Length: 259
Image 1: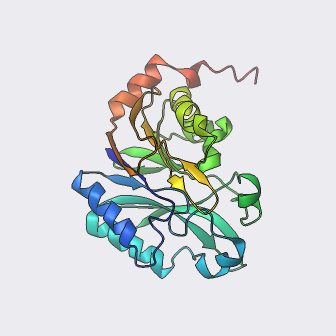
Image 2: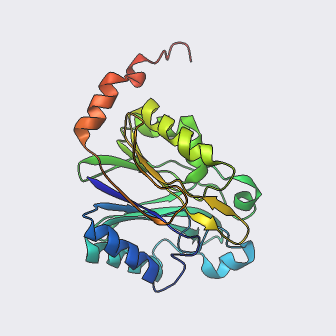
């Protein structure tokens, strides 16, 4: 399976006609990707203020998201797309949809670990993790940004059988070590591929640190970008995941009688 990760400017996807998303889909499809992962809350940008959410947040089947599903089908490309979600009760969520190449929403995940005042002042935390879905013979899960910094969450997905974790993010300076150290560690300790899609450059008030990556199940970085915009491409194979798990059998060697 070929994974594409888009590292964009903070405003690259912010248009209701989805021209920015379509450009990314076209580029990923031209490179033979099966899945495109975009940054956290790409449709609005991460820094959308609370007072704007009532007009910008989308219901899970909103027409704009239907357009994204049409793009997925047109380009025969699965898409992980972040957005601000609302529900019938008027709650707001930091969410991401996993859309298949057939244009079906396979998962709608609400971020469960909210980061700092910017998240907590705007959003309601999601109440559940979602078990992996099988896609292109891989079991695939979603997490969003701060979620991946919790070993327990990533381990839960691994214990549910996940092979690949797709992570839209909006990580900023000075927290580059999350991308350079923590994400590869999560991959290695769980025998899981992690694709981590970040913004780069200055937003309204946040200086995003880039360093998007695709990490193999042994923790090796298959592809990364530092500060520039661009698209990462990497092929992942089940046999490599199986080899990593066999050589580093952390799950099998756990002492559950002790902890």
